[in-house]
Image 1 (tube, rainbow, N blue to C red):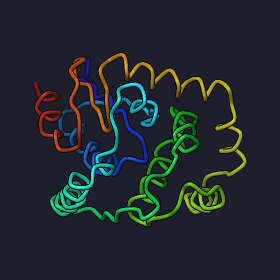
Image 2: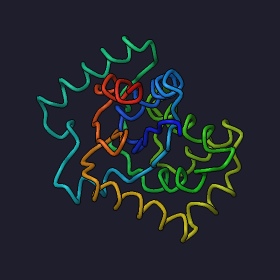
Image 3: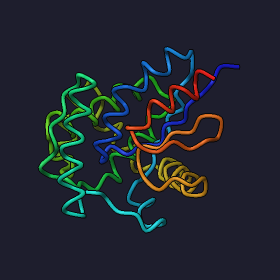
Image 4: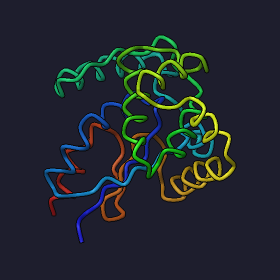
Length: 195
């Protein structure tokens, strides 16, 4: 059986964005499959007592510099969103709703790039709608998905599972049930997948 890497993420995390730009190549090199696990980071923070590094001024300043360093290393665009933090509940319900469908990859790409490349305010429904249309996704379908009780429950259950398994932030990865936290630990993820 091929190896898998579980990727617990939230669009509101710039480090989740950076991980998303690198993880497909890492998984492909190892012949591994990515198991996408959209979760609600706010729920994880609340349950674990954690908080965004940006809320601590010195750590926040450092993090912004570090994000830029990693974006340069990876050769990917990154523009810190001036609207940060954005409530990602609806966006993550969208990810839970599209999970397992042909639209999932397009949706994830559209949301990550809108937030961390185009600096869009995805806290506004009309801006989300514009991003969906530009990505070729149906706004009415999105609205149906994010209002669906089964989708809401799926996101809640994944978030609760993440907390039970020791997740305290995003991105978090599991390989062979071993937790690796942070996009700056992708080298450990790659090593674990190669074993």
